[in-house]
Every structure is written in C-alpha cells, then in structure tokens.
Length: 233
Image (tube, rainbow, N blue to C red; front, top):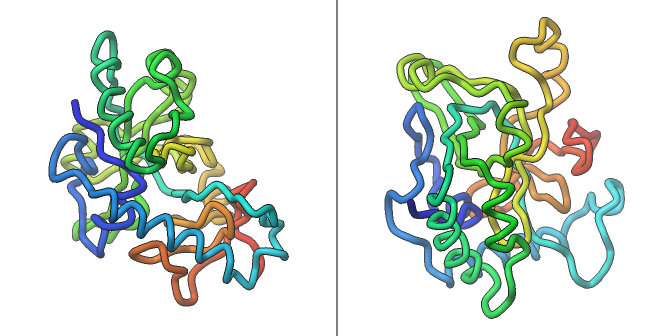
C-alpha cells in the first residue's frame, strides 16, 4: 500500500476537484515532487510572516515555526491497516516524509508508526448533497479507531454519508493525522455543537482558512488553533 504525502495532496491535488464518496485512495495517482512540496512549505511560511491576525490568536513568534495545516470535517469509512501491512505502509510514509524534510529523521519512527497508526479515513470538508463532495485522507491512531463513529462503507459510497465531526492536523513529517473528535454524530446535541466549528482547511499557525496552494482564503473563516472553534477576526 502506497502513501502519498498528505500535505502535498492538499497543496497541489485539490484544486477545486471533487472526490469520490469514499474519499481519496492511497496508492492511486502520481507522487508529488519535492519542488511541489517546497512550494507548499514556502506558502505556509509566508502566511505566518504576513499574517495580520497572528498576535491576536497567539501565534508563536519564535524564528522557527512548525509548518502545517488543520482540516475540519466529517469522517468517512475507516480503512484498517493491520499486521505486517503496517511495515509496508511505513516504507511509503518514510519516502514521502523525506521529501518534506530531506536528510532529517522522521518525527514518527517505524516502530511508533506500527504501534500507533491503525489505518486511515477520509474527512469531508465540503459537500453539495447528491452533487459533489471534497474529502481528504488522514491517518487514524490505534487509540482513536474505536472512539470515532465512522461512516459505513456502504452508506458512504451509496449515500455519501459521514460520521463524527473531527479535526485532523499535519505532523512534522507533513502527514495529516486525525487529532480530535469535535462533535459526535449520534449525539442529540450534534447541531448545537457543530455550529461552533467551520469545515475546511486552515493554516495550523495562523488559524486562517486557506484556499488552493495554501494561500489565505479571501473572506475565509478564522479558527482558534488550539480549540479548533471559530474565532473572532
């Protein structure tokens, strides 16, 4: 099973296109180049330097900032990767991580990856029911696989259904990992909970909603990068 660089997918593959009901499949399509990944990193770095809201939301002022994104949306089906397949999965993880930070060690070692990563899911950030949707792939930790209410494969493919509202965050290897359950799909207070959040892609440092290529979205939403809730501009 081949793993694409998730951060690069968001930067260059999602230029307004719609995904399948089950989200992007790992191992399909070409692998992004190192230059494409570098362009994405440069844009994220530019966002931090030029952000007019960074002081208001407590963005780090240190010279070195960990570049990344936050994705908020509802989960699709869970795709487990068990047994020896996790070792195979890590080979591709390592290959793409090295494009993100050449000649540096991975923040997630093979031993930790095999122990902690249970598989992957898709996160729906935009949809027009019955017409189109946009879903992004994210890794799922072993500790989350039984805590999250994922969509059924049948319901996702046939009806476009999704599960819990979640937040995923890219790590220092440039890979998107499910980070927190925000609202449980089966909770009777789901709607009251969900109104506090905005589905979409956000700069992990500034909280600004980003458009294609990670540029701040014109009139986009602003979130608190710690709570993931909508923030006042």
